[in-house]
Structures are given as structure tokens and as C-alpha cells.
Length: 236
Image (cartoon, rainbow, N blue to C red):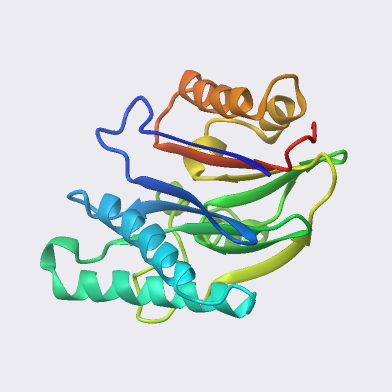
């Protein structure tokens, strides 16, 4: 598999409160992406804690026990962030989104909390695999939402002592690209624009660079973080 990760603070935000990690734990490639929330740089701390605590947990446990070990890693990371924000007033109220992928040659296990997303780009186009845990998504079919609440999350890592994450397993398809991203990408690019980049010419690294550059050209109003995963030797 080839994996490319990118993170950029964008054109407006003074600091980058996103975090992304990629590492190998045979037979898996693991990608962890988080988008922090909270003032006074607390979001930066929360996102880093989420990915680092999940990494540490996964490296210390038997990955053959999948997907239970992924569920346990999410629980562990949530507990660590929640404990920190409870014990340190500087971090009160901090939290983070999470989207995680644990991939081998045959399948991908995905976990997510919040509005960071996973997509699959294949011959059918760009398919969103995750459903945002947000106010706007919850009431989309029941009327208009106050603009001030549009991006409010209904679930986030660390804000409560327990967490309800969503989990799924997808089979790997030849030629497909898995995309994980923070909302800094999807708020600046349409599904059509992202699909055109992923299905277009160029290496996986070039596609990752193009997505970051285009999101910045379209405004770059938030931090932009993404990961692309494709089997080596495949072309999309």
C-alpha cells in the first residue's frame, strides 16, 4: 500500500489544531486523523492526544483481535483526553474529532467521531463512508438549522467520560483510493472537485498536494488535513 498524509494550517487560522499519524503495525497500515476543538490552543493539545494515545494503545495490543482492539483504542484515547480536560483548567472543554483507518491488503476497519470524514473513490465516483456527528446533519431533514449551530458537533472525543463512535469494515477494491480528511478540506472543496483530483492524472503524492493547494485557493479558512491510501501498483 502507498499512503500519503498532509496537514496545513490554512490561510486564516494562526495555529494548526489538526493532527495526523501514519504508522505500520504488521499486517496493518494505520492512519489516525483528528481535528481539535477548544480555545487557548486546547484543540491542538486534544487532537495530538487523540492520535498519540490511540497509536500507543494499538502498538501495545494484539491487532489480530480486530475490530475489538480498535474500539478499545478509541475508548482509551477518549478517557485520556477527558481526564486531562477535567484535571487542568487550561484545557477545560477541549475535545477532538477522530477518523481512523486500519488497513491490510483485503479490508479496512474505520472508526469515526465528529465531522472528520472517510471517503472511498472508485469507479462509481466518490462515496462518503461516514456520517457527520453534527447538529446540521441530525436535523437536515426536519427543517432549517441556525447558522451559528451548523457546525456544532453532537459527538467529540474527550468531552464526555464515555464515547459512542461509529465503526465499519469495507472490502478493498482494486484501483480505489481511501481518503480521510478534516472538514477544512470538505468545507472548501465540493465532492465533484475532490473526485476530479482523485480520479485524475498524477501520483498519489501529487493528488494529496493538489487537494491541499486547492482548498487553500478556495479560501483556506480552516486547518486542512488529509490522508490517502492506495495499494502500490494500482492506479485510480
